[in-house]
Length: 306
Image (cartoon, rainbow, N blue to C red; front, side):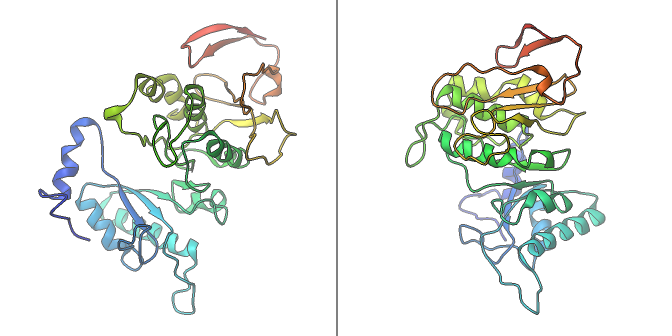
């Protein structure tokens, strides 16, 4: 790989340095085969060389895709998991030599159950196909996550894909998330401890978009320095518990945080609903205690629960 002088006349390394004052870092994208999804060179067979190049450009985060299939044979013995492991081994070798560690994010769309084996070689893994800016697409991702939320912990993250907050009216066909759907989207991604990657053009973002993406109460749960586990469902709601339904995922979730017990209530229907639960339905609640109720969207204590 070399710099594209037309797109980066001063070089990628210089461009990478130029975004640091804004609190940003460039990240690398690659593929475990011969080609990326866009047809550019993949990293198979030159993993360490590509890591060295990316690091020379100031990158230490790698999103690694799975678009160029290489059949396992008697020579390479590399299955899909094997090709991801090749890069993991290269990252370990690079770290041993330079004391620089890459954060490694797998993308294979939930095939072969990455929530089971992904943590052995990477820090995050995609659980589903690509996201879209429509509630039905988000509901399907939340539904899948409801069965694998226990896989999340420090340096082990179910990657629910890019945030679609702010993309209403964008795409083909245009996204149609409402304000409340966008809030639910951001809440779910954050409390499920997914990496939070903004995918909208912030130059044209609305005040509502900035309000949602800048919710510090929600973000601090996602970035909790003490508790790495995500929320998990304690009741499904519309469906029987543990029912797989891509349209109506689990609605009642809870978990621990260093700030207290966290609850997430999702209305999966297309109209307003009265929703309620007993505190002791959650495994995280201790009976016989009073709890102050803090609303992370109103940013205030709204009552006492027993």
